Length: 508
Image: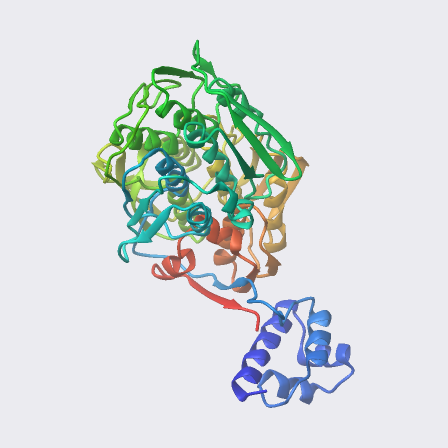
């Protein structure tokens, strides 16, 4: 074993020991060896067997070595640091994946600008490539070119990639007009509890889509029909609305969609459909009227707008670390309720005049937040369909409420078990009481403390834990952060650019 590997293993062992709160003597006692031997191991000055590494990992309750595959990515966070300067909001994850699915409507060349290089996007690209769609990154700025084949090869679909993203469900709408029958793997993504696809089926049946589900596969048959009356969505969901829009886009006629979501990703999809030549009336309302185009063959260039949930993440990072930070390119229309609640809690903030995003439609501002003495809100924090408080922004209020004076009730009524993951903040010194699977009572202010823990399997709670680690004095470790990489591009590096100290590493 090389000296370099010995040093790296020694550093991992030392960090794991320190996170456990043990001295070298305590570790030596657990291993039935001497303190001097542990000291030599941690300095990389002693050969060490795999058996000993396994024993050390078991004693410290920390996986030191992963064998047979590239180990998962972890984050080491040195907390208690103030942030400063300015940081830009990236384009919307949820808009980008919807637009990638929407590119299947177009026979021509689609270029999407500044697409987030995130795992969710990579999974959709892997699926597109597997069925014959050609994609390539045009430059380092994240511009992406998509060229579809004359015929899609659905038999060659990358099943593993498809099952790692819930966005695959949005292939249904475009494929209604391209294929008479096809198969799709079950949708995956975050572990947020059971989420039925029945609202999608109710909407898409109106276009003649019939689905049976067996052994992890959706079997789809299409007997094309025209909706004879408005489609009323049984759930005002974002992806449900997007699927209905995608199906209506190539329907030769007028489709009315009621109880539609008017959230940010839906609006971006509507703007993109207009660039394809599809007229959409009522954008930003709950009734959308789509004038479909049966054949779409255009070269289109579109810029998705910025991500309000990432903007909320960055705002929360500033709040929990008591920092002054300017967050640029904030899509203010989709943050106004959150900011109104935070102002009532005592947040010191101001914003620039509005300006247009690159799509020419979304309104942006630059938002500056400053250290503030926050008080718990009088009313509970709960999501509502847009223009209410965004469901994906609710978890960040757990971290914010933890630094506020008083008790805050958070009611995350949409998902079965996401609220449960917020109680991971208790490992970092938080005082969160789970009242039921949907309600958490947060008591602040919090004296954060460093910890080592596994990343929650849901995207937003995972980032909330990371933000709390940034506020906690000392060194924390967040293990297996794939779920964060699903939704954020180079989050650690970008936070480091404004004063955080976050190191990415993998087990050897």
